[in-house]
Length: 405
Image (tube, rainbow, N blue to C red; front, side, top):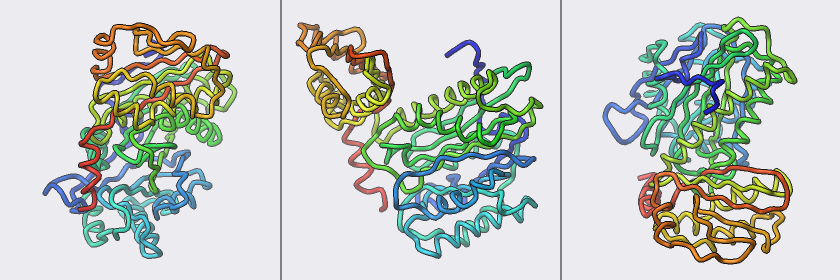
């Protein structure tokens, strides 16, 4: 991690100034008697807001509500549930999503137009609104409630994902915090992903949008657990401005500092999503170097990270490098096979397109690590990209064969 970012121990989405959160057990999830499944993130002041939403043409009701409210560029709260996606639930689903925001607006005494909503869970099931209403009423907000909220948004995730970093913009210390969930439906853009980001920096609303899109593109858009895209992907950034800095505008040194720390938070959370993928036992980092363009580097890296054959080989610690090269070849990136070098960490398995005699057992040991580095050198230019994936195990099939039941 670069020295200019300071990791805040125990940091979460409520670490930046002005934010609080809370969660409750509403009984939306089918498993666990006291599992948190409903939560609220709240700002004591109106925030600049930006969002990146699913690219799936089938959009859940909460995504539609967020789409309608994002152009106003103001937010005070987010209400979120897990256990039910509220997707493919017709007009009733849209009404339920809007009612969730109305209930929170009334509870907190804020404009309903500044309340956003997100859901995750099983598709095609209506929200149990009686339980939701009771649950919202029971939520108690606190400054350290981000830890509760990080647990409340989980579905098949094994662990909560949360982080906060601080940095200097000009002479002002600012903080960025975030939480995320995601374990399946991870690819090609974002995931069955919910991510809520906060900062106490004062941002020009246009910078908030551009910075978020850039950070998501370098993080959540570069991960793969499987080859599905969710109906509910939602990433929201709220900026309270309580750090007291002058508004940060794009093109300034302060803007670059903010973009860098926001990307650091998003990359951390994205890697945690992959590490906690359904059935995952290994994190795979694919680095493509020497591409003719950034687009080509991204295409090749994502193709390797998302390949079921590569994922399966790494799960079995089988150094079958041909699968990696085949994924690069079908990615759409420009390649010259006679120039490609391929490494499994320090083990060189292909040089200038020709197989290298390598220590198979050493390569197997690389593939057995919790973090598996793969490096592909195309030797055609100067562009680089990094993508992250996880291995594909029998547990992934087991989890998804009974997800709804």
